[in-house]
Length: 196
Image (cartoon, rainbow, N blue to C red; front, side, top):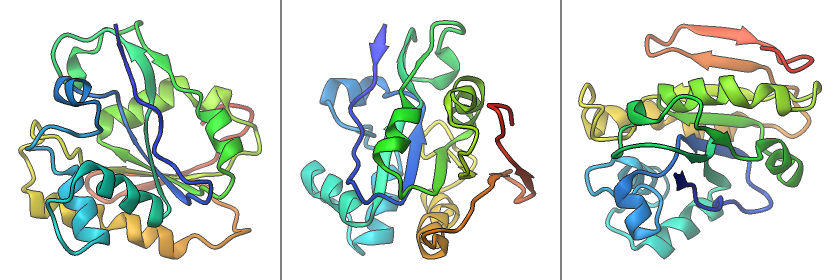
């Protein structure tokens, strides 16, 4: 059984990036996205610092200052290796995202790091949220090296959705659930009574 980390989140966070659960290299290092070939920190540094190669403390501070929160959908699961496809069905325990949103009421957009994070969220989380919850959901390409379909630069281009989401989030705006497919076709959904 493996377990996730605590979230990286300032009280004023406005968007949340959700992965699945830390991979083997991340668990060994005690850091999110520690695999050197994972593009996540390259993307965050490119978007918010205009330089790369920062240490982990500087990277976490970068996210906090940008009002970007980071966590995983799962609190625990059985998995052999690091691939999301190796997570044992039925072993998943989700994180308390409902409580997280209560503690971070300014969050209006969730960005999923890959399709597996989005599918796990859809399976485990909507029924735990308040019927009044209104969040914009965007699925982005996985930053994992296993996602060889896109180069780092291609992933960076897609992940520019984060600053766009930050710019679009106006306090008091009512948000709807929006799933962005890889082909940029969007479905507009609404969570009511715990069903999408």
